[in-house]
View (tube, rainbow, N blue to C red):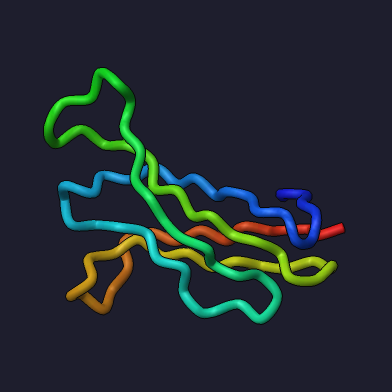
Amino acid sequence: MLTVAPGVSFEVELGSGASTGYTWELLEPHEHIALIGTSFRQPAAATVGDGGTQVFELQAQSPGHHLLHFVRKRRWEAQAIDSRVIEVNAV
C-alpha cells in the first residue's frame, strides 16, 4: 500500500519490456486520482531490447483509500497477460 498526501504527485513503477509490445495501462480513469503522465526508464547500462520500468506519475485529488487497476497487454490485443492492483491511502 502506498501512503500519499492529497495534492502531491507520486509514482507507481511496474517492470516492463516495452520492446515486446507489452505495456502497462491504467484500466479506468479514477475519480480521486489523476494520471499526470507515463514514462519508461531503463538502467544506464541497458542495451537494445532490455527491459526497464514503466512509471506512472499520479496525484491524489482527495483523501481516502483508493484502488488502482493496471493491466499489461499489447494495445491491439484485448486480453491482458498480467494485472496489478495498487492500494493508495491518501491522508
